[in-house]
Image (tube, rainbow, N blue to C red; front, side, top):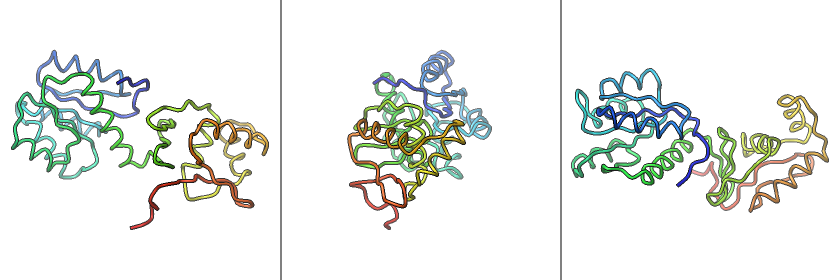
Length: 237
């Protein structure tokens, strides 16, 4: 698995062995904008309170406060931070406890790089859904409002600056119609340039060629909004 962009999140890595910790910090620095580390659970909890990381990767067996105790303390007030736990032993009792603490993945050492990266991608997807950064508009396509990336069937669709900003506008409030005038004003505010009706239509035409599904609804007198097909109504209980 190959990640081409750094995820815009903070990751806390916890491991008591210095060489292993340093190696993982270097590796994870290729995939996250900020990586911090701790050598035991006690230090990790202090860092957690300072940094408020989005993802934690921790060894279970550590001095002072072990990995499970660390996450148990965090879960008393935080159920959103994603967690990957690693251990050298397969322990059913610990695995059951980890499940109760809403752990994303439980990995047995030694951990292969491919398995680690797959686990990271899983936790990132969970995180983005929790935080509401990802807007899905078909069974196969979604737009990330934070990284400004469009994924369709797992493929990153390359977008121009204008295409990305247009999608950011309509994905920011998927149930709302945005008029051409409003879209043009938003472009002017962001880029200090006007977009004519013809320019907006040309931009949309290019996007329709890139996106392999019908993603945009145009209603006369109202404007444009995201067309979310084949999805359950998000307001339905």
